[in-house]
Image (cartoon, rainbow, N blue to C red; front, side, top):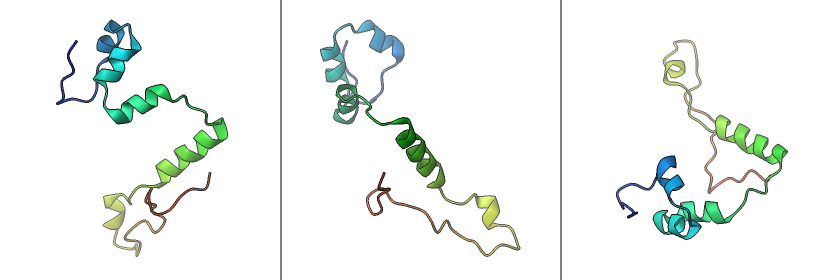
Length: 88
């Protein structure tokens, strides 16, 4: 099975057809290859904290900005993954 460089993702059927893990590594880009090699060793509490931080890190809804009686224009607690770490 040849890897099409235009798409990074393979469907479940395509992955199921490949029996050897070596072929999957060849077919996936480098970022996804590291996910296959490395198991998740996070505790449940860490996963919950990361999930909450992910949900909080979003801009304000556009309709909220358009409300006439609000002075809030952006999310002051917005976090960039490079600049501010979570210390989890």
